Amino acid sequence: MSASVASSVILQLVTFRLGSEEYAIDILKVQEINRMVDITSVPNSPADVEGVINLRGKVIPVINLRKKFGLGSKDADAQSRIMVVDVGITVGLIVDSVSEVLRLASDTVEPPPPMTGGIGSEFIRGVGKLQDRLLILLDIDKLLGHDEIHAVAQLT
Image (cartoon, rainbow, N blue to C red; front, top):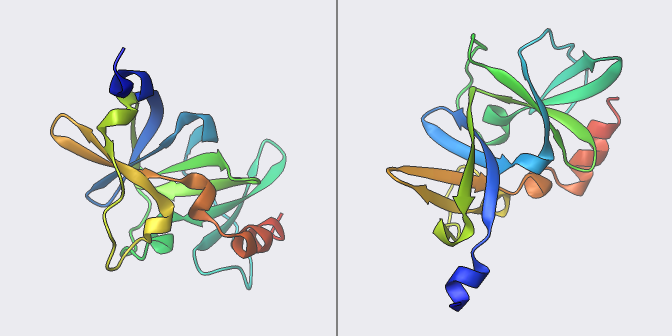
């Protein structure tokens, strides 16, 4: 068995859209995907935090990924979703839409390109090639820094 075949691992990912770009995160980090619900804003919360939601009796902070990545704002619509993920704490991530769950061979993932603006390369695990699509693979554990996790945790 060649080294490239032995080192290729199948990644299971949840893909979602923000604007015209398609992103993906490890399916094991996603607890659930919900339609948009009323979000209660919290005074003095970080700029990218929309507020909190009540999810089956548990208060969950909700982060708007468009704001986090410095993208233009967009009103929620029928396609908007809240992805509930585990980043050490449980948080909701507002995305424009959730596309699909897919499997991707790790050897089709390129290292992240050098960034000159927009979302920081520290959030990006790599860029996956899937037929005629490029998927930006996010490292969800690096999405929130230690200080931000602490600030968001204070909201619950």
